[in-house]
Image (tube, rainbow, N blue to C red):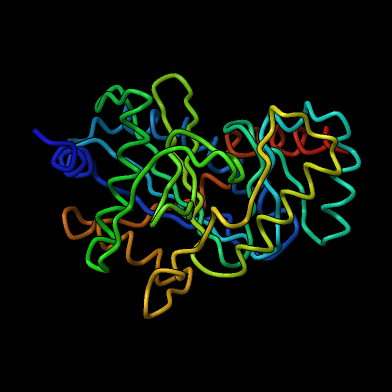
Length: 284
């Protein structure tokens, strides 16, 4: 069976629950979104164990951070002059936050879509590489009708370069990170849908300069990065691109809405939110 068929098999093997909880324009939106992701990794295992559903549940989580934000990775905390870099980001009116997964800094702003799928490997085993590949095939299938060929390989001079960078015409439009807890796995992508990618790349380039980055950090060059809209005739909004991705799944499998009101009040979410806030406090 080829890999594209394996992708369809994986998505068909779940009952998908969708939520965009955490999206917003308040300054803490990014922190809350990361807390929700950590919540869902744990909740999906509990949900499947309790319901014994066939097929098992999976969660699709999207969020838009309206407040321009730089999401730092664990490796960024080792920068020689991180405090200077943080002050620079604040001067540029970008909120710095710290995630627990992934390697390096990425920009999230009104032109960026963050999307993840969360699954339970008890029911559908996924290796680390397979989880990344599922995300690539999802985005590739969504953009195929537009005549775009999505590839994945590392773009070294992009920000947060990695083996599974999302690439169109040799330019990076997004990246993927992965987080696991016991049998839960969240595979998360940021996608630059529209907006000024030149400014985003220059921001991260200058952040690393201010932070006295060594050669272990990327020398970010704006020319190797782009947005989805750089390659299409009819521009996407973040919302319309999100809908395209969801439709790609719903054509194969219905998507239901995840009820989150009870989770927002749960001890689980409050605990994850507290941890997310504590991580961010370490930046200042």
